[in-house]
Image (cartoon, rainbow, N blue to C red; front, side, top):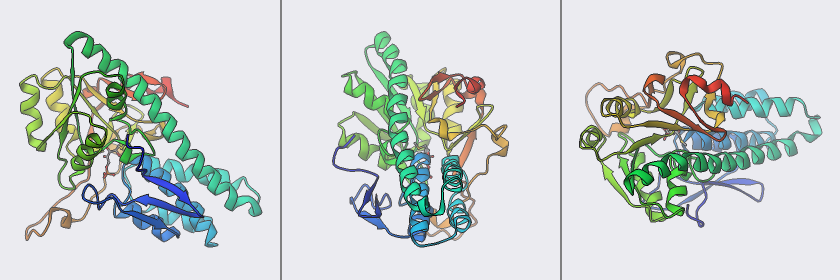
Length: 329
Ligand code: MRU
């Protein structure tokens, strides 16, 4: 990962974020001073990616307490920003638990400490995901001499505090001098694939950009050894919500016997949600398609059924989607 750029950091009592709506054209930092700044940054996707949304929300709680806002109001405002990534709700629940158990005079300090802890844990979890996922890539390189990975959306360090989830094993493989190449799908309508291509270029990881609809052909032609994607919410049965288009890649991977992995920290697993049908799917504005004078439906995520997933790469190891209980905290 780039050593110069960071997705989120504390600075003099504010929170500074890298504005992802300006990438890859410009690296612009934005200072979040208030709860509303944090909620806005999540809603308009200045920060995005499930783990980073969770960390930003945790810092948003600290900013709200600095403004003297009631905790319930803070949590309600942040929780209404984006519905699908469960890391948001996981982080807010964790903040509530810690703050309700703190003396009122300690709350502001405790909020900053807990937000920092959530950020630090994300970095460590993703490093571990990288180590576990590396084993999958090493096995392919041993057999074939090189590995070609397909990914979708951006589940790299931009979507987290560091390393990324789906890209963590790729960075680990590149650091280990394995011959790794990445197929980066554009990810319409918001083009998060451009963020992935930018990230990979920063680290000199060989990659090729493709239109979303090229994925099936490349798999049919045997040009993809493995698919690794991130997740926004994994239900208890292993059904996985991720950026819209993930399901089609999983269907194509299954048809062509390409292994399909989901990489995510435990904070993305919603054990209270029995299956994918219960996961709320965010519907975003028609404007994301540009100016179209026609009816539009714009679901931001889709559900990949557990039976299409080869394994889930977590910080506690790789498990089959039906065996998530094995890694339950
Ligand atoms: O709408 P986005 O850009 O926040 O969606 C991001 C994704 O779908 C990612 O794949 C997911 O959050 C995992 S990020 C490590």
